[in-house]
Amino acid sequence: MARSVVFSGIQPTGAIHIGNYFGAIKQWVAGQDDAENIFCLVDMHALTVPQEPDVLRGQILETAMVLFAAGIDPAKSRLFVQSHVREHGELTWYLSCVASMGQLQRMTQFKEKSEAQRGEVRAGLFTYPVLMAADILLYRTTHVPVGEDQKQHVELTRDLAQRFNASFGDVFVIPEPAIPKAGARIMGLDDPTKKMSKSVPGSYHAIRVLDTPEQIKKTVMSAQTDSGRDVRADPARPGITNLLGIYAAATGASLEAAETHFADARGYGDVKKELVEILVETLRPLRERYAELSSDPTTVRELLQQGADAVRPIASETVDRAKHAMGVG
Ligand code: AQP
Image (tube, rainbow, N blue to C red; front, top):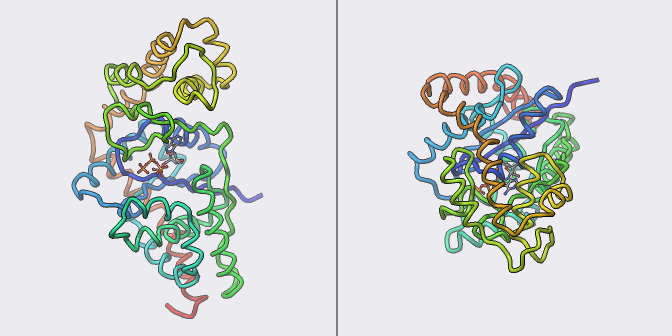
Protein backbone atom coordinates (compact mmCIF):
# COMPACT_ATOMS: atom_id res chain seq x y z
CA MET A 1 0.00 0.00 0.00
CA ALA A 2 1.26 3.51 -0.81
CA ARG A 3 2.63 5.37 2.19
CA SER A 4 0.58 8.27 3.58
CA VAL A 5 1.93 11.74 2.92
CA VAL A 6 1.16 14.15 5.76
CA PHE A 7 1.50 17.91 5.27
CA SER A 8 1.55 20.28 8.28
CA GLY A 9 2.20 23.99 8.39
CA ILE A 10 3.02 26.48 11.09
CA GLN A 11 3.12 30.27 10.80
CA PRO A 12 6.26 32.05 12.03
CA THR A 13 4.11 34.81 13.50
CA GLY A 14 5.59 34.94 17.00
CA ALA A 15 7.09 32.93 19.83
CA ILE A 16 5.89 29.31 19.85
CA HIS A 17 3.67 28.62 22.86
CA ILE A 18 2.44 25.51 24.65
CA GLY A 19 -0.78 25.54 22.58
CA ASN A 20 1.28 25.09 19.39
CA TYR A 21 3.47 22.56 21.19
CA PHE A 22 0.86 20.31 22.82
CA GLY A 23 -1.75 20.88 20.10
CA ALA A 24 0.52 20.23 17.13
CA ILE A 25 4.32 19.97 17.37
CA LYS A 26 4.44 17.19 19.98
CA GLN A 27 2.16 15.08 17.79
CA TRP A 28 4.20 15.86 14.68
CA VAL A 29 7.32 14.59 16.42
CA ALA A 30 5.55 11.43 17.60
CA GLY A 31 4.19 10.63 14.12
CA GLN A 32 7.47 10.83 12.22
CA ASP A 33 7.77 7.06 11.75
CA ASP A 34 4.17 6.53 10.71
CA ALA A 35 4.12 8.39 7.39
CA GLU A 36 6.09 10.59 5.07
CA ASN A 37 5.95 13.96 6.83
CA ILE A 38 6.34 17.37 5.28
CA PHE A 39 6.56 20.29 7.73
CA CYS A 40 6.38 23.77 6.29
CA LEU A 41 7.13 27.13 7.90
CA VAL A 42 4.42 29.07 6.11
CA ASP A 43 6.05 32.49 5.99
CA MET A 44 4.01 33.57 2.94
CA HIS A 45 0.84 33.03 4.99
CA ALA A 46 2.31 35.21 7.73
CA LEU A 47 2.35 38.12 5.25
CA THR A 48 -1.46 38.24 5.14
CA VAL A 49 -1.28 40.41 8.25
CA PRO A 50 1.27 43.25 8.73
CA GLN A 51 4.77 42.05 9.70
CA GLU A 52 8.02 43.88 10.42
CA PRO A 53 10.55 42.37 7.90
CA ASP A 54 13.49 41.96 10.30
CA VAL A 55 11.26 40.59 13.03
CA LEU A 56 9.69 38.12 10.62
CA ARG A 57 13.12 36.97 9.38
CA GLY A 58 14.15 36.30 12.99
CA GLN A 59 10.92 34.47 13.76
CA ILE A 60 11.34 32.14 10.77
CA LEU A 61 14.74 31.02 12.03
CA GLU A 62 13.59 30.82 15.66
CA THR A 63 10.55 28.70 14.73
CA ALA A 64 12.78 26.34 12.74
CA MET A 65 15.11 25.98 15.72
CA VAL A 66 12.18 25.29 18.04
CA LEU A 67 10.90 22.58 15.71
CA PHE A 68 14.30 20.88 15.44
CA ALA A 69 14.79 21.27 19.20
CA ALA A 70 11.38 19.69 19.81
CA GLY A 71 12.49 16.61 17.89
CA ILE A 72 11.70 17.11 14.21
CA ASP A 73 14.37 14.89 12.71
CA PRO A 74 15.76 15.91 9.29
CA ALA A 75 16.73 12.29 8.67
CA LYS A 76 13.07 11.27 8.83
CA SER A 77 11.00 14.33 7.89
CA ARG A 78 11.24 17.31 5.61
CA LEU A 79 11.20 20.75 7.23
CA PHE A 80 11.48 23.79 4.98
CA VAL A 81 10.41 27.40 4.51
CA GLN A 82 7.45 27.96 2.16
CA SER A 83 8.99 30.95 0.34
CA HIS A 84 12.10 28.88 -0.49
CA VAL A 85 10.00 26.80 -2.88
CA ARG A 86 8.63 29.13 -5.57
CA GLU A 87 6.08 26.58 -6.73
CA HIS A 88 3.79 27.50 -3.78
CA GLY A 89 3.13 30.90 -5.33
CA GLU A 90 2.95 29.50 -8.84
CA LEU A 91 0.34 26.82 -8.13
CA THR A 92 -1.69 29.37 -6.16
CA TRP A 93 -2.22 31.29 -9.40
CA TYR A 94 -3.47 28.26 -11.34
CA LEU A 95 -5.77 27.21 -8.50
CA SER A 96 -7.12 30.75 -8.12
CA CYS A 97 -8.29 30.45 -11.72
CA VAL A 98 -10.40 27.48 -10.61
CA ALA A 99 -11.64 28.86 -7.26
CA SER A 100 -14.70 31.10 -7.17
CA MET A 101 -15.12 34.36 -5.28
CA GLY A 102 -18.28 32.97 -3.63
CA GLN A 103 -16.36 29.99 -2.23
CA LEU A 104 -13.70 32.21 -0.70
CA GLN A 105 -16.27 34.62 0.71
CA ARG A 106 -17.79 31.75 2.68
CA MET A 107 -14.55 31.05 4.60
CA THR A 108 -15.33 31.86 8.22
CA GLN A 109 -11.69 32.62 9.09
CA PHE A 110 -11.59 35.33 6.44
CA LYS A 111 -14.71 36.88 7.90
CA GLU A 112 -13.18 36.88 11.40
CA LYS A 113 -9.70 38.08 10.43
CA SER A 114 -10.93 40.75 8.00
CA GLU A 115 -12.85 42.32 10.90
CA ALA A 116 -9.47 42.97 12.52
CA GLN A 117 -8.14 44.57 9.30
CA ARG A 118 -11.18 46.82 8.95
CA GLY A 119 -10.48 49.68 6.59
CA GLU A 120 -7.82 47.89 4.53
CA VAL A 121 -8.47 44.21 4.06
CA ARG A 122 -5.64 42.69 2.07
CA ALA A 123 -6.34 40.62 -1.02
CA GLY A 124 -3.84 38.06 0.33
CA LEU A 125 -6.05 37.49 3.37
CA PHE A 126 -8.91 36.71 0.99
CA THR A 127 -6.91 34.29 -1.19
CA TYR A 128 -5.05 32.71 1.76
CA PRO A 129 -7.07 29.46 1.49
CA VAL A 130 -5.95 29.06 -2.15
CA LEU A 131 -2.30 29.31 -1.06
CA MET A 132 -3.07 26.71 1.62
CA ALA A 133 -4.63 24.47 -1.03
CA ALA A 134 -1.46 24.82 -3.13
CA ASP A 135 0.72 23.94 -0.11
CA ILE A 136 -1.21 20.72 0.36
CA LEU A 137 -1.72 19.69 -3.28
CA LEU A 138 1.89 20.28 -4.38
CA TYR A 139 3.15 17.26 -2.44
CA ARG A 140 0.44 14.70 -3.30
CA THR A 141 -0.60 14.91 0.33
CA THR A 142 -2.98 12.22 1.57
CA HIS A 143 -3.61 13.58 5.09
CA VAL A 144 -3.70 17.05 6.64
CA PRO A 145 -3.82 17.20 10.46
CA VAL A 146 -5.87 20.28 11.30
CA GLY A 147 -7.95 21.62 14.15
CA GLU A 148 -11.67 22.30 13.70
CA ASP A 149 -10.85 25.93 12.78
CA GLN A 150 -8.92 24.88 9.64
CA LYS A 151 -11.21 22.06 8.54
CA GLN A 152 -13.14 24.35 6.20
CA HIS A 153 -9.91 25.18 4.37
CA VAL A 154 -9.15 21.49 3.81
CA GLU A 155 -12.68 21.04 2.46
CA LEU A 156 -11.99 23.89 0.03
CA THR A 157 -8.71 22.21 -0.97
CA ARG A 158 -10.57 18.98 -1.71
CA ASP A 159 -13.18 20.84 -3.70
CA LEU A 160 -10.58 22.72 -5.79
CA ALA A 161 -8.66 19.49 -6.47
CA GLN A 162 -11.85 17.67 -7.49
CA ARG A 163 -12.98 20.51 -9.74
CA PHE A 164 -9.56 20.75 -11.34
CA ASN A 165 -9.37 17.00 -11.94
CA ALA A 166 -12.90 16.95 -13.39
CA SER A 167 -12.07 19.76 -15.83
CA PHE A 168 -8.47 19.00 -16.78
CA GLY A 169 -7.72 15.37 -15.91
CA ASP A 170 -6.34 13.51 -12.95
CA VAL A 171 -3.56 15.76 -11.65
CA PHE A 172 -4.16 16.12 -7.89
CA VAL A 173 -4.44 13.61 -5.05
CA ILE A 174 -7.54 14.39 -2.96
CA PRO A 175 -6.38 14.88 0.66
CA GLU A 176 -8.29 13.91 3.80
CA PRO A 177 -8.47 16.09 6.90
CA ALA A 178 -7.11 14.28 9.97
CA ILE A 179 -8.59 15.84 13.08
CA PRO A 180 -6.19 15.07 15.94
CA LYS A 181 -7.63 12.99 18.80
CA ALA A 182 -7.45 14.60 22.27
CA GLY A 183 -8.22 18.14 21.07
CA ALA A 184 -5.74 19.93 23.31
CA ARG A 185 -7.02 23.47 22.72
CA ILE A 186 -5.07 25.61 25.15
CA MET A 187 -6.61 28.93 26.11
CA GLY A 188 -4.93 32.21 27.11
CA LEU A 189 -3.91 32.40 30.76
CA ASP A 190 -4.94 36.06 30.95
CA ASP A 191 -8.35 35.24 29.42
CA PRO A 192 -9.32 31.56 29.37
CA THR A 193 -12.20 32.21 26.96
CA LYS A 194 -9.76 33.08 24.14
CA LYS A 195 -7.41 30.66 22.35
CA MET A 196 -3.73 31.02 23.25
CA SER A 197 -2.14 32.69 20.21
CA LYS A 198 1.35 33.76 19.17
CA SER A 199 0.20 37.11 17.93
CA VAL A 200 -1.76 38.15 21.03
CA PRO A 201 0.36 40.67 22.97
CA GLY A 202 0.74 40.71 26.76
CA SER A 203 3.27 39.00 29.03
CA TYR A 204 0.71 36.87 30.85
CA HIS A 205 -1.25 35.57 27.85
CA ALA A 206 0.91 32.64 26.74
CA ILE A 207 3.52 30.27 28.08
CA ARG A 208 6.17 30.19 25.41
CA VAL A 209 8.18 27.02 25.03
CA LEU A 210 11.41 29.03 25.42
CA ASP A 211 10.26 30.87 28.57
CA THR A 212 12.60 30.63 31.55
CA PRO A 213 11.36 28.77 34.67
CA GLU A 214 10.82 32.20 36.30
CA GLN A 215 8.66 33.41 33.41
CA ILE A 216 6.63 30.19 33.45
CA LYS A 217 6.08 30.59 37.18
CA LYS A 218 4.97 34.21 36.84
CA THR A 219 2.54 33.46 34.03
CA VAL A 220 0.98 30.39 35.64
CA MET A 221 0.67 31.99 39.08
CA SER A 222 -1.02 35.02 37.54
CA ALA A 223 -3.47 32.92 35.49
CA GLN A 224 -7.04 34.13 35.71
CA THR A 225 -9.16 31.69 37.69
CA ASP A 226 -12.85 31.51 38.48
CA SER A 227 -14.73 32.10 41.68
CA GLY A 228 -14.96 29.08 43.99
CA ARG A 229 -12.35 26.51 44.98
CA ASP A 230 -13.58 23.35 43.30
CA VAL A 231 -10.92 21.82 41.08
CA ARG A 232 -13.25 20.51 38.42
CA ALA A 233 -13.50 20.94 34.64
CA ASP A 234 -16.71 22.76 33.80
CA PRO A 235 -17.54 25.03 30.83
CA ALA A 236 -18.86 27.60 33.31
CA ARG A 237 -15.39 27.73 34.92
CA PRO A 238 -12.97 28.23 32.02
CA GLY A 239 -9.99 29.22 34.19
CA ILE A 240 -9.58 25.98 36.12
CA THR A 241 -10.71 23.95 33.11
CA ASN A 242 -7.81 25.42 31.12
CA LEU A 243 -5.29 24.69 33.89
CA LEU A 244 -6.51 21.09 34.10
CA GLY A 245 -6.33 20.84 30.30
CA ILE A 246 -2.72 22.04 30.32
CA TYR A 247 -1.87 19.54 33.08
CA ALA A 248 -3.52 16.76 31.05
CA ALA A 249 -1.66 17.77 27.86
CA ALA A 250 1.70 17.97 29.63
CA THR A 251 1.38 14.63 31.45
CA GLY A 252 -0.54 12.70 28.79
CA ALA A 253 -3.39 12.13 31.27
CA SER A 254 -7.08 12.52 30.49
CA LEU A 255 -9.03 15.49 31.83
CA GLU A 256 -10.84 13.13 34.24
CA ALA A 257 -7.50 11.75 35.48
CA ALA A 258 -6.31 15.33 36.02
CA GLU A 259 -9.40 16.05 38.13
CA THR A 260 -8.82 12.90 40.19
CA HIS A 261 -5.17 13.82 40.65
CA PHE A 262 -6.15 17.17 42.17
CA ALA A 263 -9.11 15.82 44.17
CA ASP A 264 -7.37 16.74 47.45
CA ALA A 265 -6.01 20.10 46.30
CA ARG A 266 -6.77 22.94 48.71
CA GLY A 267 -7.58 25.33 45.91
CA TYR A 268 -6.22 26.75 42.70
CA GLY A 269 -2.87 27.67 44.30
CA ASP A 270 -1.95 23.97 44.68
CA VAL A 271 -2.84 23.26 41.06
CA LYS A 272 -0.81 26.22 39.81
CA LYS A 273 2.29 25.27 41.84
CA GLU A 274 2.32 21.73 40.52
CA LEU A 275 1.65 22.93 36.99
CA VAL A 276 4.70 25.22 37.14
CA GLU A 277 6.94 22.28 38.11
CA ILE A 278 5.56 20.03 35.40
CA LEU A 279 5.83 22.65 32.66
CA VAL A 280 9.38 23.61 33.64
CA GLU A 281 10.46 19.94 33.50
CA THR A 282 8.50 19.11 30.34
CA LEU A 283 9.99 22.03 28.43
CA ARG A 284 13.53 21.76 29.84
CA PRO A 285 14.96 19.37 27.16
CA LEU A 286 13.52 21.51 24.37
CA ARG A 287 14.98 24.67 25.89
CA GLU A 288 18.40 23.02 26.27
CA ARG A 289 18.49 21.70 22.70
CA TYR A 290 17.36 25.11 21.46
CA ALA A 291 20.31 26.75 23.24
CA GLU A 292 22.71 24.41 21.40
CA LEU A 293 21.08 24.99 18.01
CA SER A 294 20.89 28.74 18.38
CA SER A 295 24.67 28.89 18.79
CA ASP A 296 24.95 27.50 15.24
CA PRO A 297 22.41 29.24 12.99
CA THR A 298 24.40 28.37 9.86
CA THR A 299 23.71 24.67 10.34
CA VAL A 300 20.01 25.36 10.86
CA ARG A 301 19.87 27.44 7.66
CA GLU A 302 21.60 24.59 5.81
CA LEU A 303 19.09 22.08 7.13
CA LEU A 304 16.25 24.30 5.90
CA GLN A 305 17.87 24.55 2.45
CA GLN A 306 18.25 20.77 2.35
CA GLY A 307 14.58 20.42 3.30
CA ALA A 308 13.56 22.76 0.45
CA ASP A 309 15.89 20.99 -2.02
CA ALA A 310 14.31 17.65 -1.11
CA VAL A 311 10.70 18.73 -1.69
CA ARG A 312 11.20 21.08 -4.67
CA PRO A 313 11.29 18.34 -7.35
CA ILE A 314 7.91 17.00 -6.17
CA ALA A 315 6.42 20.50 -6.20
CA SER A 316 7.90 21.28 -9.58
CA GLU A 317 6.53 18.10 -11.15
CA THR A 318 3.03 18.84 -9.80
CA VAL A 319 3.07 22.40 -11.17
CA ASP A 320 4.29 21.20 -14.57
CA ARG A 321 1.49 18.65 -14.74
CA ALA A 322 -1.13 21.22 -13.69
CA LYS A 323 0.10 23.78 -16.25
CA HIS A 324 0.23 21.25 -19.02
CA ALA A 325 -3.28 20.01 -18.18
CA MET A 326 -4.59 23.60 -18.37
CA GLY A 327 -2.97 24.19 -21.74
CA VAL A 328 -0.09 26.44 -20.72
CA GLY A 329 3.61 25.95 -20.08
N1 AQP B 1 -4.13 27.50 21.61
C1 AQP B 1 -3.90 26.42 20.89
N2 AQP B 1 -4.19 25.19 21.39
C2 AQP B 1 -3.94 24.09 20.65
N3 AQP B 1 -3.37 24.09 19.42
C3 AQP B 1 -3.05 25.29 18.89
N4 AQP B 1 -2.47 25.66 17.70
C4 AQP B 1 -2.38 27.01 17.67
N5 AQP B 1 -2.86 27.55 18.81
C5 AQP B 1 -3.29 26.50 19.59
C6 AQP B 1 -2.03 24.73 16.67
O1 AQP B 1 -0.69 25.05 16.35
C7 AQP B 1 -0.44 24.70 14.96
C8 AQP B 1 0.31 25.77 14.25
O2 AQP B 1 -0.41 26.95 14.31
P1 AQP B 1 -0.38 28.06 13.20
O3 AQP B 1 0.71 28.97 13.47
O4 AQP B 1 -0.37 27.51 11.83
O5 AQP B 1 -1.83 28.64 13.36
P2 AQP B 1 -2.60 29.39 14.46
O6 AQP B 1 -3.67 28.46 14.93
O7 AQP B 1 -3.02 30.67 13.85
O8 AQP B 1 -1.57 29.66 15.66
P3 AQP B 1 -1.54 30.87 16.66
O9 AQP B 1 -0.58 30.53 17.71
O10 AQP B 1 -2.93 31.28 17.06
O11 AQP B 1 -0.88 32.00 15.77
P4 AQP B 1 -1.43 33.39 15.27
O12 AQP B 1 -1.55 34.24 16.50
O13 AQP B 1 -0.38 33.90 14.34
O14 AQP B 1 -2.75 33.17 14.57
C9 AQP B 1 -1.82 24.42 14.35
O15 AQP B 1 -1.94 23.02 14.17
C10 AQP B 1 -2.79 24.94 15.37
O16 AQP B 1 -4.01 24.20 15.37
